Length: 479
Ligand SMILES: [Zn+2]
Image (cartoon, rainbow, N blue to C red; front, side):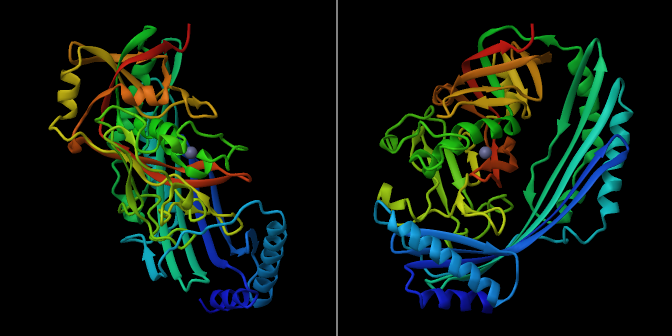
């Protein structure tokens, strides 16, 4: 911390209103396999220091990958110069929400270092999964994608905070493709990406799931096409994770809501006049933002503004009740404190508001997944993430999926194909009339959520229990 503290003292001497410095070490290993061979191994080691300065009402940010005080001072001078220039054209007063001083450390709970076992260990597991998949009837391809990521940060600011974090992340995916009956279809097994050590990867059951997805990829080739029309949908947790990410997660980023994020991935319909009065979903719908969730991909202890991670309701009993809020914009909602959602992907990136760990709370009444299916006369059960699109305001949305099952008279009767549904985001959540209880709650998530210009890829966990939606427009994707 010595260098960071010294650079903060240096900037204090320049009469800045606020400054922070973040030493940021990003390490990642990606392994890709196809069939029974290694398709690629990528290793990244990116390290450096980012310095942010507020001078009067102007912000400046500069970074350096070089080590040593001379380089840090050059970056600090550049950030300060940018901030002074920005101040000359500032149109309003910057009001920075207060945050207690934190002198703290936070690390992902791990039993085994992600980079401890050699590359060969993980490759062997993925090749074995590929062999199992290829034994499936009519299977023509197996694939996998595995990411191990470790990010170490040291953070210091002019308010006296000194924070060290050490975050480890695992993302494992395998998939199967089959060709039969004139069709080519795939199916995947994407266990939840987690902040965890190697033990998480080691504990996954690839064999059983490889057999299952190989058989289901083939079954998908023989599935009948769905009918176009309004129907009942039951959506599994992995599928819902993408739906909630796009239709709740992004629309509730306050910087986006206030027009700071128009150049890339759009704006939001969830404007601040709707806070605490807008019916975003049925009264069963509760969305919890929780960056304190153990193993959550966005659980980092403290964010890149030195704000402690927190937990709050984004949507409570169907009503919009919160946003992801940084220190600069908190006062726009008359909030005294930001909620710890500001993160940067690498040292050279400016920290921006990111979707927190965000999940649909399980139903409060006892309801198993099997009871939910049994209670549904006709409809479609969708598993897994597929294609999607959503407009700039996060209103008109369309989703596919990975596997589709017909429900007839309370039973799953067989597979369907070519299913997509579309809806207006808040109307979709208003049509939620049942959520299974916590027994079937599962996590999913992303490590490639794109935002910002230049683009940054962030990570966050989502989750849900299977939930039911009535009168949703389903269309046959192929004619
Ligand atoms: Zn995203």
